[in-house]
Image (cartoon, rainbow, N blue to C red; front, side, top):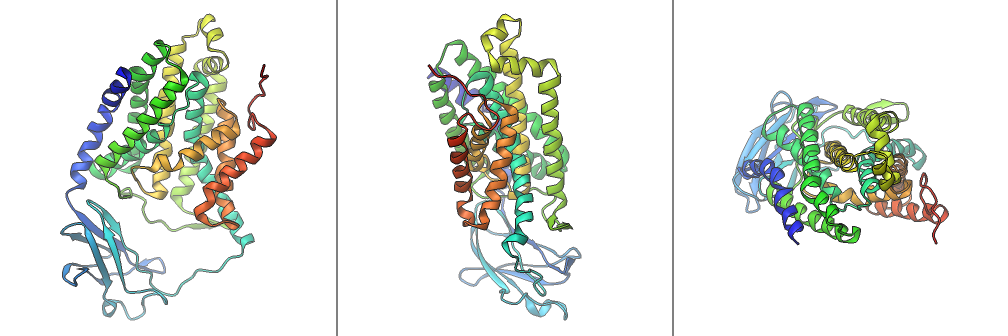
Length: 420
């Protein structure tokens, strides 16, 4: 109990200090914003009005040269946003089948985006065969992001035997810290992301130092430590909700990008960069594990901690390094995930089950297995929407996990162990 209290106070004080300022700033006001485009070109001089549910006008704005409008709201609530069609250029109109007004709820401190489709729709109904390459690409990107988090989780399990249910909160922490540096401190997203990853790494090492190392020295069992991770995850999620709020918010940069066609698929620049970052980082992790002294020591501790210690390896130092690296990878995964899905207090929790699925499918405790398993999970999650509703796509990924484990219980790259 003493260590659990210690964890709740000590390991999170740094995160609380970093996130408290955003909570105060966010509470300053609510806004509605959007960008009007016709065929990729901004539409200037269009009037947007906002009224309450009772019909009282609370704000009005005219789109600027970039087609952007921003309207500040007096308080949270439900508002109707209307586009004044008579202010549209002669050759521009609301897309057929769409309305010139929309009613939306706005939460405390929320910056809500509004979309008014203009012009003739260019959407083409695609067959399942046409959609397959695009879904496979989206699944590959998603799988690479999951792999970043899964590799860290797998390394922590391999060196300590701990199943960390609070790992998803490290993913969320990276996204929240990047939001803090980018939106509230005004840094560009790239330096903001670098600072967020560094801060997540420091907090990961801090967490091990004040919580997990004392528990290991006390001989606390793995089941008891697992329960502590569940409690820590619940506490952190509640803290994020209290400080950040329940709404989702985008980064200040790279919100709207046009996709470029590459053969049968289309990809936005931010998705291409995210995929490149994931590949480079994962290759870097592979190089460190295979070619460096600390990597070889990590693999030795994962195979047999007692034998590694008797060989002169500082096991605690290796574990501390793994926690730092695992937290950094999880934080980076959260940043890249939020780039496409926006930042929310439960961002990491929503993918935690898929991260565990990737680790288990690839083989418990193996970094390369976590990579392979995550790619399988990510691709299957997206491609499965061809035959099942999108709301059930995570269930489809877990179904493939069960099927593969029935054939190969140790996972794709795991080693079979003799029992008895």
